[in-house]
Length: 301
Image (cartoon, rainbow, N blue to C red; front, side):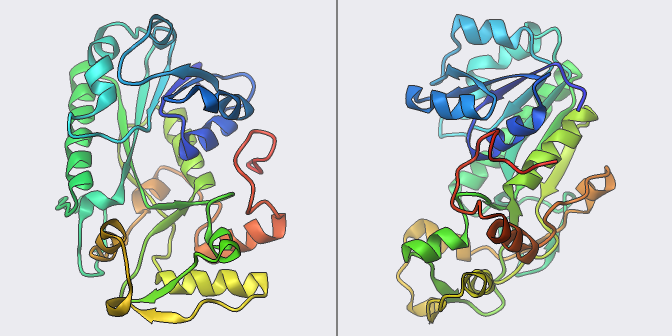
């Protein structure tokens, strides 16, 4: 990946995985709202900075040297916090900036009754959080148009990987097998989010890209497969209409779609984990399913 300096607004789970791919020759800076996470960011090769809605002089200085900007902070009711704080800086005080990557969600598509959708499908978000995402996506694309900087919108499926997966839920006794007829979810291993960011940043390529594996699948099937690998009994199946769920959990089941990744494959990305079985088998065989992410622990090419 031929980049100079990476700056990450919101160095969370996915962005930390990307940082672990950048290698020792790439300078990576990233923000968090919590000083307690500084050591975690450093373990992933990220020089940490505090950001809570306002740019500090050090952030401004680092942005001035940045070639590739990754934004992984969700918008709020007051719009996108990064754009609110840094729009003018991005437009006029980042002379080396070549590319912007914005991490969004496949939730922007809303419900399509289990049908396939791709990047040309009109967005019809259901939840408020997805409505805000659509607006933020548009603002980032407009900023790219105004500045001539390519902006890649990465619409992420449900994320899992080391430290965040069905094995953890089975171990902790929180796994459930809720059965709603014809319901599928889309998912993506965190290593493939990192890989998608790397190829798009390496090509300075803008556009909208779904980042999801090849096989949308019923959630209860994922739990059953993980239980089989662990050699434990899966939890009993529970009909969806009998399940007690939080409003947010229930909202996820209110959206049903199969999301295509053909656009990402068309730019040359080859998924490491094209389906949940490949990914869970690798996590189990590697023994890193219960670990967090760090540069020393990531098993990425």
